[in-house]
Length: 146
Image (cartoon, rainbow, N blue to C red; front, side, top):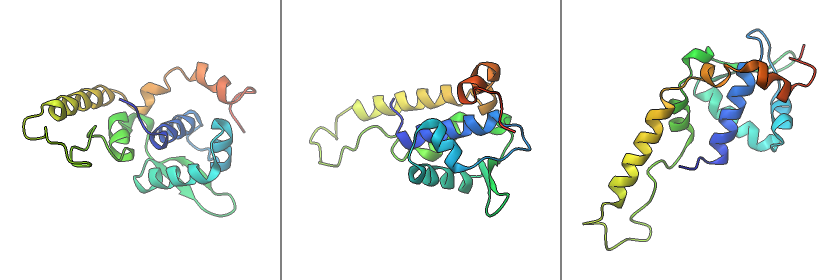
């Protein structure tokens, strides 16, 4: 199963935010710079994450973004379901396929996606950042930002 870059950037953003102290905010510009992603693209991703409640954003001076939920409450399977637009694998109607009435491929792919998501449902954001001592130096060479 291949995730879209949109979902990839969403998950990376959540990991970044989960590594920050709970009382710290950051900016979209900083997150996009760390991952070398267009700020405009990251704005769209973070806006969606904020709409879903995964990210809390504050506008204006002193504003920024931070996790909207505790990392333990963020189910990775739920995030993927929310960010991925097409998890059904294939579209048998575009163009129309003559095999559709008897084909078992769609069923097999649906089962595969279900199994993929079932595994992701076993992980929370806290699980993904459990090794924060290894992750923090990869994002911030001098330790966590002040």
